[in-house]
Length: 500
Ligand SMILES: Nc1ncnc2c1ncn2[C@@H]1O[C@H](COP(=O)(O)OP(=O)(O)OP(=O)(O)O)[C@@H](O)[C@H]1O
Ligand SMILES: [Mg+2]
Image (cartoon, rainbow, N blue to C red; front, side, top):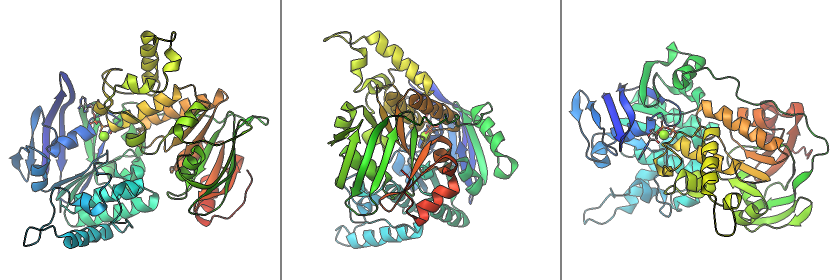
């Protein structure tokens, strides 16, 4: 159905795709794999007419095609769900889905009813619950993701590209999406699926194409390969066990934050927890169980019914992330693009943001050499792949943008870091390094709260775990009890068993 042959792409003088092939058959789900910055999104943007290839050919049903823009690609039956959301925040789901191709009635009037019905039908086909009439910025990240997918599906695409669609979804939502993908496959749609979750690949995909550093590494059937071989193809080396060892628990570690009572406006259990020096405290629970809300309430960024807090023993009331920052508490938010980075700034500027105190020579001067050296060091730590510290963040791949946010926080003089889904979109190789850095951070007597929907990550990294259900903490587990079964039991049945 589709053939990409010897595709090359340069930005300025730098070639990022060096002659890549991709062959898609009707009715298959084809995984496109590779590390952060390997060139997956770039290749897909070429397919969709958003970027022009420097060289190479695109054939659809054997016919050579060139797309002047995305609209032409849509006309040829290609739909894409971008890695970075492209929704207009203040518009609702229906308006977003029909943006620039509004349905019109006989008199040329907008046929709102028809659009709404069509949108509802598409969302229903996904088997999810998404309110259609509220601005999308009031939807959860997962719901926004489904609006994106719905938008592509409503185009009746024959070739559908999903660039990391499951990164933000819960297991149940992912299952819904997979069911939809299987149905589309049955209908003969060809799907390109990009994901850093290798379990997903083995569950849903038929064939695999692997890229490494912009080069084509190989293509094979999923049934012909196992996990280790696949990782080796992607990374070019073997990856050792990813979680650093947990230190023995220090019995008298100082309490850095004591949440004595946090109650969300929407009701639910009252959350209580203590964060001690040197530890990584996991926040587990299903998406929507109140983990992010509770953290935001604690920082004063989300209204709470009650918020009694002590920071280093003293009663405290925070009025937002900026004030938290002054107290040495940093938040790495869930939706990086909106809250974490200024994408038109360079890597260096982003890493230095709010961090100039560190490089200040005196009242007037910033020590630029030190700033540069520190940035380079930070970039190496998390393996940011970029042209250099002065590269604009919006020229980085999705995963590399995220590494920049992580590098920035790890280099702040923070006492406490709160990571919301820290490794979302990060490739297998870099994950291990980020975990090690988090452990080092804690080992210096600081502390981390880690919200994560990835159970292996919660279990592998946390010294203790607070389990959330319907709006608050229902259990805190430690030691032997930090295991998947235990955590899932509390997350789903919510038996109250408080051992803070
Ligand atoms: N507009 C641009 N200008 C310069 N370089 C760019 C631009 N867009 C992408 N690149 C570079 O092209 C390379 C491939 O990026 P791409 O986004 O395709 O990676 P990816 O495989 O999708 O990675 P990820 O898993 O992190 O999403 C990266 O090194 C990136 O920095
Ligand atoms: Mg990408």
